[in-house]
Image (tube, rainbow, N blue to C red; front, top):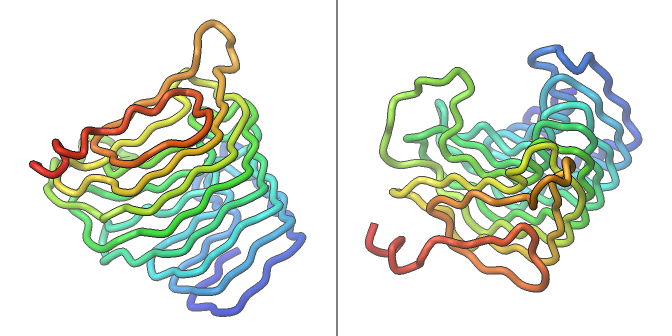
Length: 229
């Protein structure tokens, strides 16, 4: 299902199914749209359960189930257009056996912004990497190094629990030239499903804060280093 150049749309109680190994089978794609509300959906695909692309504003995904698939993704952004994305909410959703849970992904050298995210009350079950921000998105590999990038800011991750199928439960990979700003974590409890060691987090060029219990531990980049970059 594709929502293109849409406004004031409600998608409710929709089921989308495709084989887990089928490529390019996004469940719901939203682009050049605003004020869209997706709820009570069950999506099983070989790609993103929900994909939010550029020129989108005020998009909500809630009370939905994702898996198998690649998770709920914003992007990829900045590949061939100036990104403009803001006010995206994903809440009260469950993810089972997906590649990622919630993810923001952009290409190196891209332009524009993505801001104002709320990811809240999410349950992860054996999700490969439950929380991802990736400003170095390059699915084919061997992408050239480029300066600049889509500015990602104002992302809140609140009340997220469950298990990861890989040890790296949280991955924030941001550009030195355009670091991620104003990232917030509160009440996070993610464990490695193997139970052989604690889950961990990888943080690169991201600036933010935490509150309450946050597991795995988040060590944000030093703001003074970001200011000097």
